[in-house]
Amino acid sequence: MSDDFRSAALAAAELVSDYLDELPGRPVWQPMDPADRQALLELKLPEQGAPLEELLAVIGEQVLPAPMGNGSPRFFGWVNSAPQPAGVLATLAAAAMNPSSAGGDHADVHLERAVVRWIAELVGFPHPAGGGILTSGTSMATILCLAAARHRAARRAGHDLRQDGLAGLPPLVGYVTGETHSCVRKAAELLGLGSRHLRTVATDAEGRLDTAALRAAVAEDRAAGRLPFLVVASAGTVGTGAVDPFHPIADLCAEEGLWLHVDGAYGAFGVLDGTIAHRYAGMDRADSLALDPHKWLGVPVDCGCALVRDTEELRATFSLVPSYLRDEAAGELGWFSEYGTEQTRPFRSLKVWATIAHRGRAGIAADIARCTALARRLGELVATDPELELLAPVETSIVAFRYRPAGLSEQELDALNGRLPVAVQQRGRVFVTGALLGGREMLRACLLNAATTQDDLHLLLAEVRAAGAELTEGPPTP
Image 1 (spheres, one colour):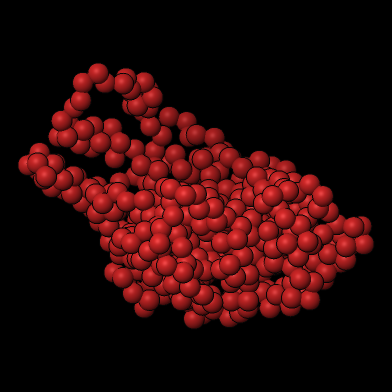
Image 2 (cartoon, rainbow, N blue to C red):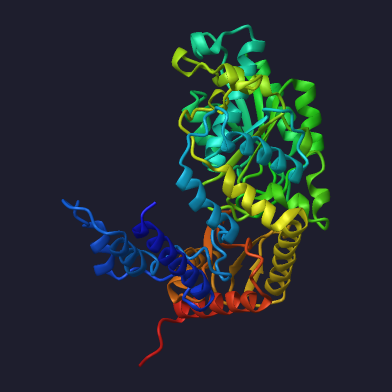
């Protein structure tokens, strides 16, 4: 290792440390200066290489000053977390080793098996050896889980899916709600199922899947000659964080022979909070669970995880071992590349290990409980504010609300709340995003950062009211 790298690595550590230290006092997000944006867009391919010191200067001057904003404790947008420091450090070491975690006898492979088991233990999901794999995120984990569900359905129908494809099978039908994440539809389309055969079933007044409506839809599809095979339930819906009733859904799936997949991308780790753990009863009965350590756990992006009850079903869906990859030392479980689509796989497990090991189960549970308590407090503040309206009960750490000043029609309120998120973001003091709920525009605040304070909640609502007033009344006269 050259002195050039050593000195540059020390300088990089100082640069990153300063960046993280300064985050709380900076604007959460601001639009980039057009000239700075254009400078990045028009970077020319260099003919000659640059020294590491010069590259660090570019990072410090042109990249770090323009963050997405998710490192700030006042970032309430989407479901993007601040990175845990232990994970940041581990990412550097993993990059230095730079293995392919497809398989073999090296540290990253064995560490991944351990941290997948840790994740399963954290959320209380049964973990047979080989019953899980780290992915780029829940979008990819969903593809793996739905592929295994499709494979099982075809096998039970006497069809060799890997050899013959979907041709000759009755239409396979899956069931979702209107709040199911878009990654499920993407997975269905990519797997050749077709979004037409992903049926949206009704929800109850709280946004949870209605099992009576599900039962009726399954019966209708069977009568029409279609092949029901999948139900997707949520451990925290996109819009409001609602958790579906797992026990009755699992009962129905067992009766009908359906694969139960749970989308726990963001919300599954909420089971660690004793105050809301009862909402997750029955989640452990799912056939598969997709979740994101890079959300509530704060593992640096990217890191998702697919957990499956039937290891051999997942392996039979993907295993393909050409002669040049035969490995007598692989052991009974084989390579990770037999359980998914990636052959060359990054060393994701080290940052997962560091993040969980640094906080421990107790620390993680305390962080999550703090976020859910803050979300409930935010819900209370919204509910008692005459200019705001709480749109759904706070079940996890998402608060769905809207700005509702007096004297505006429903149409005007919808237009106002549709414009409001960007207006708040551009002010730079807090960051919140919007969504549709029941066809209405709303603000959707997601709390993932345990460093957030009650003062930050008050600031969020003050900024919403201030930006809303400006949009309603126009800018003041100079």
